[in-house]
Image 1 (cartoon, rainbow, N blue to C red):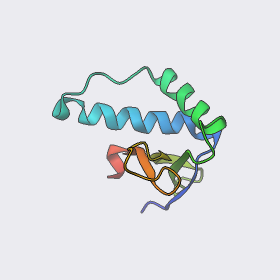
Image 2: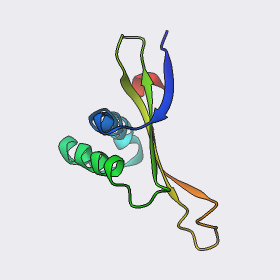
Image 3: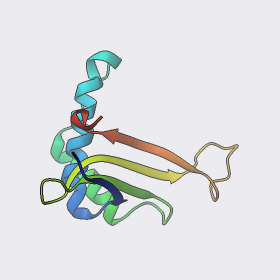
Length: 106
């Protein structure tokens, strides 16, 4: 049984974040008619930047980690930002930019 919890993402999680996002994208690509995902290294660099230097203090990245194997394996991830819709209060509302769970953990 998995021992999973959610915490704020750290720079060291960028590779796991990108890997989960890429596997999820590939698993859904044919059903949803998605193009191929970006290169794994590009995705990892993007998440490193998002964690190290978010665009604002309200941007957040989170990971779900499984500790049942002795370490921490990223099995899910989420990214939040201030709401961008003009009819929403950007100071009080957040927008979910990314929500992904590894296919084997769904």
